[in-house]
Every structure is written in C-alpha cells, then in structure tokens.
Image (tube, rainbow, N blue to C red; front, side):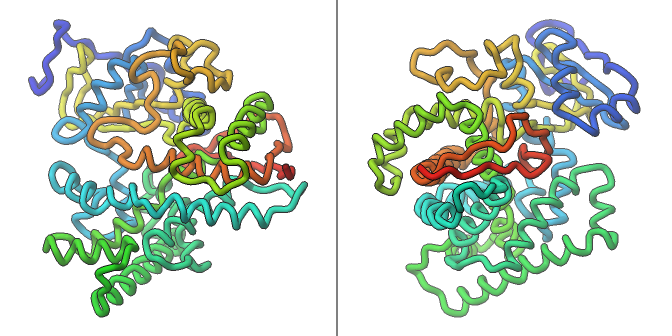
Length: 442
C-alpha cells in the first residue's frame, strides 16, 4: 500500500470480493441495479467488494465514505476508467473527457460552465415545451422519454448555435445518445471501428462538420454582439490562444449527454402514479402562475414543485451510479482499495437504502419540507460532488421546473399501466420499453 492516503483508524482492511467472477458477471449484466441493490444489503454500511469478469467492483454504501471518495475524485488517486472511452464519439486530442487536473478545470470553467448556466436556456426550453405540448391530442398516448429527448436536443442546439436543429442533426444526436454507453462497455471501442459502428462514426462526423461550418462562419464574419454559445467559444479561442477546434467541437457535443429528458420522464411518471401529489402540484402551479407563462422568478415561488423534483431524483436519480478506478492503492478511512479496482457510488442504491431512508420506495415530497427528518449528508447525492460534480445542477432544476410547469398548465398525464417500468441504463436512467402517458386536458 502507498502512503498517499493515511488511515485514521489503524490498519486498513481489504474487503474480500464476494462470489465467482463469471457468475457475478452473468447476474450483473442483465440487471445491474438489482444486482447492486442486493449486494449492498449483504453487509453493514461500508464497502462491499465483488468480482465481475476481470474487474473488482467495490460498492460504497456508507454515506460518509461516499463523501470521502468523491473528495478524492481526480488523479493521482482516482480516474474515470472506462468512461474515457467515450472519447471515440468526441474525437480529437486534449478534449475535456480525456483531460484531468488544471487543463480539465480550464475547459470546465471557461468552455463548459457558461453553457451549463446560460441564462437563455430556460426561456428557449419553455417556448419549445409550449409548442411541443400544444401539438399533443387528448387521449393519444405520448412516448414521453422520446419526446422529452427531442425537446432537450432541440433546446440545446438552439442555445448553442442560435439555429433550429434539422432532422439530420437530431438523428445524429440520438445516435450519440445510444452509442456513448456502448463505448464504455467491454468491446465497445472495437465495435466502434467495425461495420456495426459505421452509422455512429458518420453521425459523429456530421456533427463535427456542422460545428466546423458554424465556427468558420463566425470567424469570417464575427459579430461581437452574438449571444449563441458557438460565437462565445470562437471568441474565447481567439482570446486565450489555447482553445483548439477539437475542443470547441467536443464542447458542443458534450452538452447533449445530459439526462434532463430522463428526469422529466420520471417526474411525470411519479405524478401519474401519485394522484394526491399531482393534485397539490397542480394547485400550486395554478395559484402561482394564474395561467401566465412561467418565468425564472416564478420558479422560486413553487416550493412544492421543487420538493417533487427532489423526491423524483431520490427514487429515479438522473445518474444511477458513479464508477471510478483506483489509480494507486488507497486507504479510505480504514478501507484498503487496491490499485485497478473500481469504486462504485450508486445513487440508485443509496437513495433507496432502507437503512438510511424510512419507507424508501414510497414517493413522498414531504421528506423535503422545511423541518422534515431525513438522512444527513451523502445519503442523497443526485448531482455527485467533488471535482467532477455536475456544475449545471441549478440550471437543470430550473429548466426542468419550467418545462414541467408549462406542460402541467395544459395537461395531466395518465399512465397506461400501473406497473413500474423496467429500467435501462443509458447515459442516465431510462425506461427499457416505451413509456407512454396519456394527455388529459385540464
């Protein structure tokens, strides 16, 4: 063991991996969420290890250890492991997903953060949500995950470029949404290079060409007053002398693997399943907005809506888990993690752990009421924490509120089935099969 991390509790302990590697892999593959949930309950809160194939995963279940691990979340202690394989989609050198340390922070703060917190985005999202929901017809089921993904992509493309996304761009973005999780899987980067990956490579190249054309246009005829994000990135590159075209392309493409469409899907699923919650939700929206379009200022006056969003992220977290590779032997508060093992912090597991939450599977926004009793600290971490926390978390809540409130002024959404949907793990947590909700006019 190295002495990079020093235990305060004496001799560190290495958790022995449970089960056989092949058996565990066969169980993990079909349903990782069920596998991790069951694994977490096999021992007391702490770190429990399991061998899956050629990897050792160490699931962190103690909120204090989750906090400590996320604080270490950067080289030389922890790396993003297989996540960096998504670089095949982004292309180029020196891009955000392949960097760490000061250069990663520079790109995050100067290239990414202004996009994640762009004040234009909420109004664009509300306008597009109004148009989308106005086209729905009462009684005709809506595949909510797919329409919310399309809404997300159209909103972000307009924010980034100032233009409407055409169908080839939207299809290319949808291809990227499917392929990025594939790249992380074993054999994903090999599959990318084979004929099976030809469509994804063409989609990535199409987006690169579109961004390159926009960049060229802005360099040829610069407009200092332009507020679209591509114009800002071009100005940033000219000013700092270090931002490359590879980084501009990757930064634009990086805005789309954002699970806000997953989040919206689960908000409306939870409302459809909980009529009492929905009634309070609608009453607050009607009382505060009085039929007017929702504004950024209005969002602050919707406390019950906010509680519904917080509870949705508890039961259906936008990120289902964080996987980090130990780059050296680590002692995390007395738990030895050998180099090469993966630490797993799962929001899905922790947010539903009965040792931390009372009646954890019950959807109850009142958990988040002022003065309510709930677990402290990292029993809840929907946006992660530490160096790789979500730096657009407040914007995500703002935009989701404005979209959801806009739709709810016009429609209730009813479930076709009361059965909990099977989950698929993409970039975020999504329904495995189409989740159709039925609009009912208000």
